Length: 319
Image 1 (cartoon, rainbow, N blue to C red):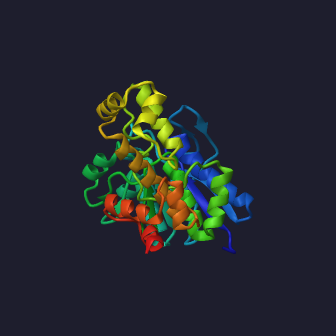
Image 2: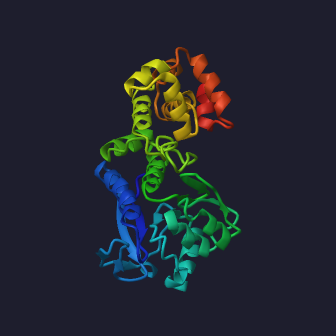
Image 3: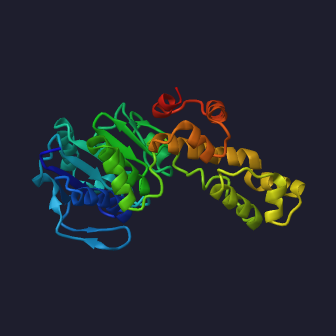
């Protein structure tokens, strides 16, 4: 990109700071890497009170801006307890429609999707929002094709995300589209992003699933498995870690998590394999070993058995 692009951050009342700051830092890092972005902060008011109580001031009124095709507009999310679209000026929704006609890239974070929907821009388009708000978005805007349990969506020049950290995932995805994987990876590394995630991944991390219990010994086993996916281990070995008998551990683990130890480990290995297949150039054989399988054939069988529809990028690597 040779010409300067402007990234507009629309800041509503009761904005959630991390919805704003996460995306902001991604583009700030892009600027530090030499990409010609300029950042502008816009709103319907000159000052805004965040959901945390912090006041943001000296904001430019949206009507004084005219985003173009190469620009981006991010609509930050706001307090999920105070979704009142009547607080926004009617002229703001007309402004969004005009910006859309300019083919500007429009992105919502979390509840920001409701503002795009109010402007009619999500009609008959796939979109998403925070998991707590999915049903409300479906009810309030039935023409929007609201997706359950996905991190972010793209429909033409409109992106929507689940919010908070997924805003960073979305921003990195856009950086990769515009400037390539190496640039996105460099920014992710600078921000100490633990794992690059694709839009079709679940909102609840697989590493947090099956852990809604208070059994310390089962948590210890889960932590060990997460940290040692490349290793094989018998039920006897795991039982010794927490001073239980093998049968007792098997029974308690299933009772507390709802799945067996083998099923739990397979879920985690699939997640690791998907990440490596998408975000690394490792050979399939090496990825299989990192995930605890002896051969790439074993890995392929597991992926094809447990995944109804593999992402296109993974299908290409496995073919």
